[in-house]
Image (cartoon, rainbow, N blue to C red; front, side):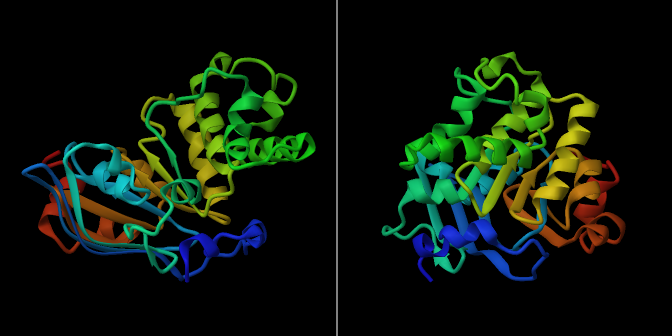
Length: 270
């Protein structure tokens, strides 16, 4: 199945029930920053319509690995990658893959809210316009649909022309989620999306992710183990660039197989 053909118009009507289908399949992945071996022999599969959490101490490789899933590491000089990262059955590191289309279909939300210095409306329509959508009525529909999906519509529907930077931190992060959803991705990558937010905003984002996984596959990096335990279906524990353990979340937190996982979960290090 070709990556570009996997995402068609009918994806808008994709089923909202959980599936056991593996949409991300990583095999023998190694990543080097120059001479530094940052990721070692990563093997993992992630299921469609689920939330997968990556946990581990700072510098363990979890954010580096997250960025391999939409080739964000390509932008870093001196990076070399070996192995396979298959999404919807296609190796995304093949030379034939259109990276722009890949990043449309595998969206990214970062640690710090990063709205563009534009209006709320223009933030949401930036991606669709980039991909050729110009009809105002269609753009209006995308804006409302995306903001509703990000649980933000009722808060901003009367101020769409106002600058996005006037929103609160939590609202800005939900705007960034809406901006990612506006191009109709299949997968949403999130790198510490709530670490800069207060507890109330964090709870809103977590509730939102629980709703979004019915339609999207979500992969989240978090230092907050309670957050991983609350919202994820599976959890992966990384240490020193290795994937130490990966299992359903209750098993990771209640009965891990590896002593290193247990030590991290119980606060003995990290």
